[in-house]
Length: 86
Image 1 (cartoon, rainbow, N blue to C red):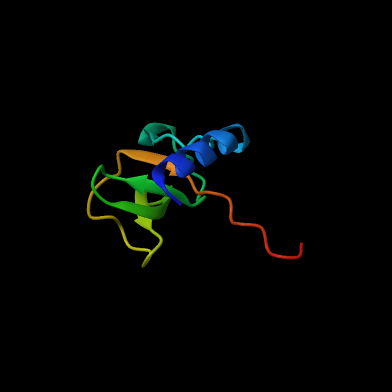
Image 2 (cartoon, helix red, strand yellow; image 1 turned 60 degrees about the vertical axis):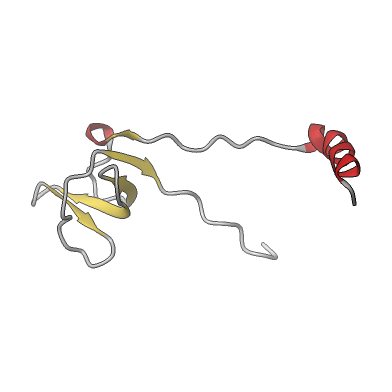
């Protein structure tokens, strides 16, 4: 397939494409603090973590240890994919 054919094909399928918005990073102050797992970042490293209220600290899911730096932003975890045949 040459470039012109590819461009024609793309224009034909353009109407069938669906744009899915990506989640936005939110300020850490708005994050849930009830133990739910979320994506957290300090602007450099992204981790799955949760807030432990009694310790007043964010924890990493990797080894349940306190983070090296305080996160600045968060976003919800994406939904898992559907299982085949369900």
